[in-house]
Image (cartoon, rainbow, N blue to C red):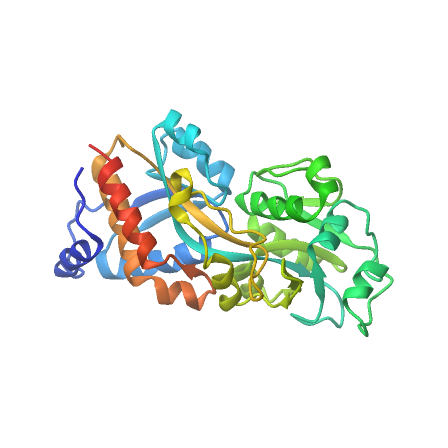
Length: 339
C-alpha cells in the first residue's frame, strides 16, 4: 500500500469537502484511556470535515493490545510501548501519536490544585502503604506551613491493564529502590495497598468521590473532572507544576528513533522545568493488514491529526509530536505497511 505524504493526503481530502462517498467506513480502534480526550476531539472535527467517523473503545492499553492481536480493530492504542521482538513476532508497526503528563490527584478539604507538593520517593512510599496519613512527616516536610489533616490516605490505582500504570510504575521504580524490587514496572502489578478502578475515568471518579484519597491520571482527566492535582519535585530537585511547558521540557531531548517502534519512555527526565511523569501514547497496526482500505483510512486520520490536530491537542494540555518525528513516522508507514 503506497501512502501520500501528509500534505498531499490533506489536499486530496480537502477536495472531498463534506460530500464523502456513501461507502466511507468508520475507523475502528481500541485501547488506552490516556489519550481518549484528544482522540475524541480529533474524531469530532475529522468527521465534520470528511464524514468519516472514529469508533474508539477507551478500554485500557492491555485491552487495546489484545484487540489488535485478535484483529477485531484496525488499530490498537497503548501507553506502554511493545518491544521490538514482540512487534516483529506479531507483524506490527508502532508509532507515537501524542504526549501528555500523568499527575497525582488528591481529595483533601481546603487543598486547592497545585497547593500540595510531593516528590517521587514519598509518592512511592504512599503507594507501598508505608505512609498512611496525610500529616506524615515526609509529606509535611515538603509542604511547610500547610495544614495537613490527621486523616488516613485512601490509595486509588488502576484495576485494568494500563499504559498509564506502566509509566507511573516505571517512574516509581526509577526513584524508589524498594518499589523497584517489591513491585516493579508493568501495565498491571500486584498493588501493595489501595482500591482499584477501571480506566483514567474510573480513577478520576473514585478520587472525586472519596475524601482523603490519592490517585494518578492523565492531566486532561484532572482538568475535566476539576480534580486537585499536586506539584512535583523533579529529577533536578525543582518543584514544578503540570503544564504544557513542563511536559514539553521532559520530551525535548527524546531520541525517538533510538528504540524499535519509537518506544521511548519519558519518565524522570532531567531538566529544571521537566515534569517527572511525562508519557507518550502509541498506535499499533499490522504491517500486512487484512483490510487495506480500513488501514489506509486510519492512516489518513492519523496524518490529519498530526497536521491539523496540534492546536486541539494543546487546548487539552497534550503535547503534539514534533514535525521531525512525524516525517520519520511517515517514512515508516511507506516502508513497513504493505498490501
